[in-house]
Image 1 (spheres, rainbow, N blue to C red):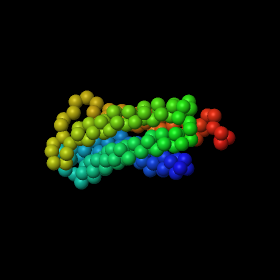
Image 2 (tube, rainbow, N blue to C red):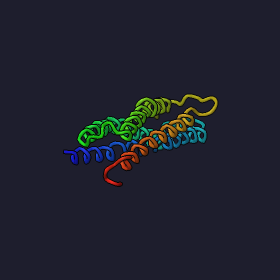
Image 3 (cartoon, rainbow, N blue to C red):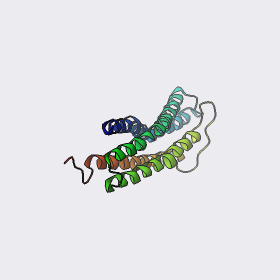
Image 4 (cartoon, one colour):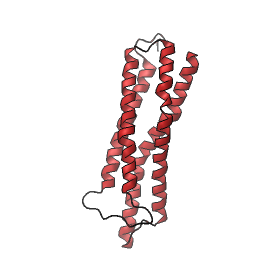
Length: 178
């Protein structure tokens, strides 16, 4: 049963956390492109470029990336659940490396649920819809600040998961010798 739990845990991690890491990493750059496409088009035509096909595609791309993050984040809850079953069957629930992994996993989940996903929501809401005029901006573009913040938060999220992965592989005190 341990091998089954471990296999499902690893598969869930790869198939659920991987897409979140990739989509969340792609979102800030796509947000910058969507923002620059809208502002470049508006500046060159003297009118709103929000109706341009490129803007619709950029907005659709952002929505898709955000949907991938939301859906796979929900699916990703299987990773710690299966991890607990695996750790219990291995008898390592009290191990320091596992406790550190649980803390880091909780931190990564908090960064995703409390900072990245709401940040993506806010960025999508701030973007002009293709059917309406963009709101005139004053000072540095909020989308640029939002993209930079999301890029930083995604880096933190990915670093936390990379650390958990390393801990899972190295497992200090492991009897496998690896």
